[in-house]
Length: 414
Image (tube, rainbow, N blue to C red):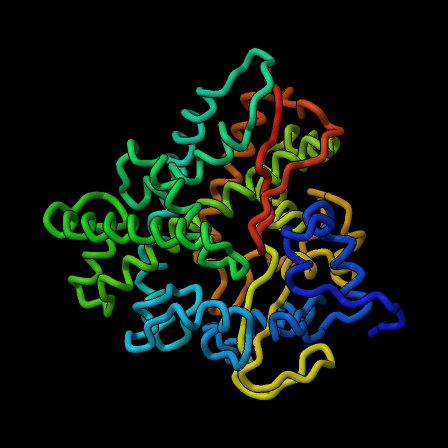
């Protein structure tokens, strides 16, 4: 640990895209933080922020730690969201598996993952169809267009909607609702964003209530039908739990996968030698996606709560204290990844932590990987000469805290 610099350590707020310097280049700030103090208590949030790979991986894989921020003593998340929770209700009726602890977490996640993974395993042809149809709508005459709006945004929402069994005509609504409810993960949201979140949540709640009732009468070949059938077969899941977790799937299967695809396209266009490797052998796309996830992951950090007194990275942690493992920082740790700031799709595989780990590893990871692999291969097969409209232009990163994705990605294709 090196704290010889007089420069104060960045607060958790400064480690979000609300900070212009972090938005432009998070990695310089994170490298400095990892060198000077890889485990430190942030006074603003009350959490211990971890930026070294060994500490991050150890914490996310530790199944003894808690996930629910309401079990924390004085974390930002507890202070921000504690007053909004009806404590008279079961916790599983007020939050998704993203923040549940066992036994509720395992009880809810097991049937949901069982049904989701079974669908993902046979969903590649549908993903390929959706991607091809999306490509058909893109201009191929050299006209400049926004690849985010035309390609990266519609594919994930169309895919998750198809898995859920959502009417294609309602995709625009679903995108709007998912943009709203993701503000639930933003502790710095404004009053306007809170109102947007509440309205979106109410709309989704009403939609899923209606659809679950319909599937009980008229089952279809979709995830909603799978879940009500599992309920009928004895799975201990309430309708409240289904609605909350279907909303979480919608968000997790939408915005972060959009960012994964967008970040991947941009990186390949900025690194023509790496793109040439992919074009020479599209069979390496799995390695390409893993390097994108390591190099420019969609999610900044995750959270845990200490279930007992402990020490992480030399930093004492009290029971009930929040821990924020910084996934983005860990994925560029030079102790683990050689030349970590080089984008290299041929890199020797070392496991990244972009999806977290342990019991709470991202439930949508297999679907995100599938979509990104198909989207990258199909895009560069259809448009091998795709180029950035202005390679020197600064990227337009979104300002949503704890996520990293592009607002726009101007390209041209022939």
